[in-house]
Image 1 (cartoon, rainbow, N blue to C red):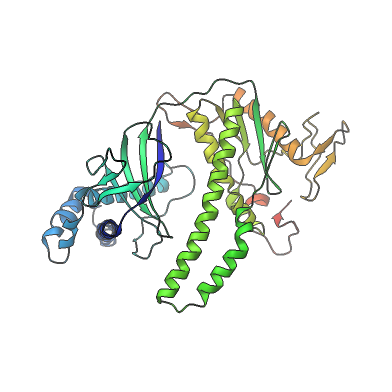
Image 2 (spheres, rainbow, N blue to C red):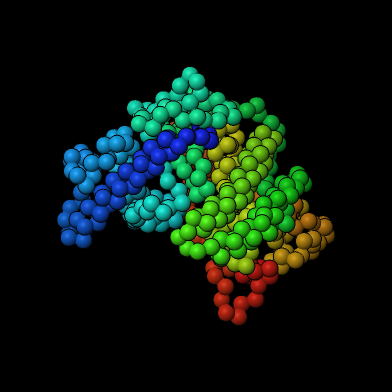
Length: 414
């Protein structure tokens, strides 16, 4: 399986200028090739092949006066930029034809030098790991890198990224074997929420850290300072970087929390079942800030790939499953309940339920049924994911708020 490892890099002033030049050249090649294909499509001509674009926009462009500076960077950077454009078009075509699952993919767009994120991609011909701990990048030099952990194998590709607050990262793709953990006798159903980030079927609760809410006071002050600066001034650029750094701290803390929580759950459980939430729908309600602050999608994605890595079973329960309406003791469906109802008594057996714990137990039972029926998201013999058919979001769950529709805590229909 392929894994990606990110490390912080600290280039000096000369290397930062060389990387800026590489970012710009890769962007120019992308835009030139994209423009040729758009113009050909508008004129009704055939799709321009990659070989023709490589000859015209890279090889011959280096010999012209307008694009002579393309020779100052590694040719691998330019070729990889063209390959990334081909991948973007392929994803777009597959999405239009229905071959690609998930959301519809938009066609490739032009890149700007003002984009907050700049990156280049390299193969093994343009970088190598040196004995002194630096990473040599062609026509850039040896980048000083912080290694909190070693790479498990020789990397196959490298992506150099500059984020919005000026930090540089090296992202390595590594082919590794799965690290199978010893089998355990427990499995877990997980109910994700806002008051508690996650409630497990065994009764454990993971408190919601609310990193964005805790940083709001400082963010408001920094954003006020940014809004008072003159557009285009150096002080405004400095203030923008301060805001970006604060947002990066929030994102880093949230990611660290997700990694620690997901790793602990995978180690303690042989099988993990989680509800497939309509996060995009919930993000259009009054709870949008809290929903995005929780980061449920990133957390579920970590659970999924770590389950594959460590030989665990993972399954998603359909979002239409009424986990909060069914009694986990007797199976009686007691109907929908508003969000302010945190405890309720079953009308059939009289069992007193905590809303979140009962939902987690129902997710566990439904996940076991899905695995027993052979419909879990597992891997086939070729290593490709086998997924169930997508179920459209329910109108009351993912739809936008209508005029006159009553809500409880901002979620339509609940």
